[in-house]
Structures are given as structure tokens and as C-alpha cells.
Length: 171
Image 1 (cartoon, rainbow, N blue to C red):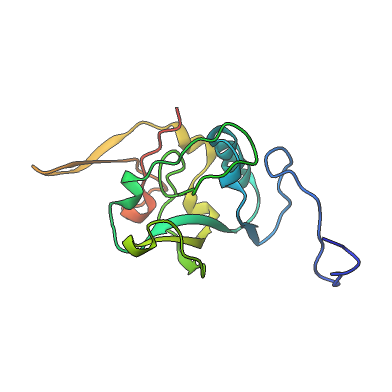
Image 2 (cartoon, rainbow, N blue to C red; image 1 turned 60 degrees about the horizontal axis):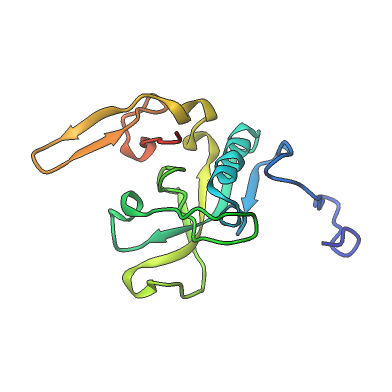
């Protein structure tokens, strides 16, 4: 992006390595079509970097299903062998396990399994609701036990809202 061509007094374009460089302070961090082009181990490091930042909000590409409530639990993020390949990333599924987004912006594109509810979206989160890197390896607690299923969650943020709980399995 040309700095001179798109120069405004309050907008600055910089070259940045989201995997290696500290993320500059800001209100909104936009990570569009990036993480799914990295192997999962690098993707987890990118998330660590995002969560260590002083940004307040994250807007990121992710896959989502508009009809299946079990989608995030069933979804498998495929690993890719090298940077530059691609997989449809779901940040609410393992190994990322983000909570449900605060806001969803559906992209105007038909993706594989679109008729079954799969969507490519931009998802918006308050970064403090996602977690901290030290939360990624916490012990699992068992809640919501009934005769049909056992759901595993990690208590996060001192809240009882399921939206803010997740099962982190980074190892």
C-alpha cells in the first residue's frame, strides 16, 4: 500500500510481521485472511501476539455455521505444511477456542457447504474477552453433566457466562 497515495493525517500504513513483531497499540486490530495461511503452530503464536497487544478489539476472518450449534465443537482446523497454503480457519474451534463473537459480518461469498450453513465471516471480539496467553494451559473443569453428555469448559474471567468459557487444548 502506498503511503503517499493513501495518506491521511490520522491513518498510517506500516509493514508488519504479525507473527514476530509486537503489535502496535490501537483500538481495533483487523486481521483479515491472514491466520488461515499459516500452519497451526504459527497461528497459535499469532493469537498469542494478538492477546499480548494493547489493542481493545479484534476483527478477524473466521468460518462460522449459521444453523448448527455443534459446529464449533465438531470443526477441525486443518494444519498446513507451510506459510502461504490455506485452510478455512474457525477461531471458535480447537486449538483456538475463542468465545462466540460479539458481532458477525457475513462476507458476500459462497463457500463449500454454504447450503448447510457454513459461512466465511468477519468476527468482532473484545480482546479481553478472548483470554490471555497464560490461560491457554489451564486445568479443565467439568460442568453441565447429564445422562446424555458431558461438556468440558474452563472457567475464565471469573464469570459464569458460558459465552466466556471454553476448553483450551493447546498441547
